[in-house]
Length: 446
View 1 (cartoon, rainbow, N blue to C red):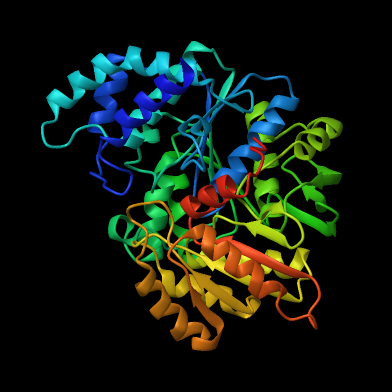
View 2: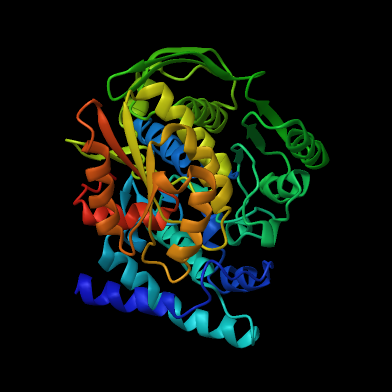
């Protein structure tokens, strides 16, 4: 039943407003959860917003909570390969049959809400968010880690009130909905901070930090700031990841191993530890250090600087905006020693492709531009024009299909025998990374 039922649900979801089409309102979600009996209030929530790092931070928090013996639910987006990835129980994607059953129970309520809002039906993301809430309530979970889809204030997830709100680094993205002013974007993200909650705030640019802190004061939230109340004390590159010492809210956690690459992932880990400290003990009591070590060591974040093939090494990374691309470049320079790295880039049409390419240029010997499976993929001729502007014509190749692009990049990486350590980087979009993982037969790694 799983395959047919899941395909039916995926088709029904795909027929709804896509995630790229937003009507910024919580009215539909409030109506839906009212009809469902407020499932999101049957367990405590750790709510995660920000521009980049949300999914990795949510996965880190989830892994730590599991190590402390709690039953967890985790809602993240978008997915790489299957919608089941968006709803996890105890660290694993929801069973397809369970998801299908939840959708079938939910469907009559979806029709009722759609009828109340003619012209603005429930969107794909709103329905998946509701599915997560009811799945977590049915399990039941001890705690849910919920990642914001876009923004914060009017995001579908914000019908939940987080006991802990985590704000990862804020940059510019989704300008058509969030604006191109960093303070305005920060105000949207900070909307998840609720009265008397704990706000765990990653390091931010000054204009974003000011807005987030003002929101915390307005609602009476306690604030924990990276670089002041918590942060990374030390990090060393290690085989398969990095070794860390983290200053938490209640003390130091040392001899930690995080199997993720880059300083940004170390900062995500620090935010995750602070969030769990706040959730379990109000930030006053030192957590069991061995449990923290074990929790971090079990973390995975598929599609985030993930090695999916060797000889040559092929990496995939879901960076889709300049902010994320700069973090990716820093992580590559920090953790890898390629002497010739070739990029494969496909982006969505609403993204800052030029800014992303400019961020990647210093570490790429050449780039192969292509498209991914999304109908919103930027046409190849458009991204090629931008790539030539950034890289020059001699460093750009074009392939209409992603599989051909990867093959071309492998050939370019290996073509000059005077170079050692060739590699290929596939990036530009979560969709691109998901497509590449399927093509390359990467294990799920959930």
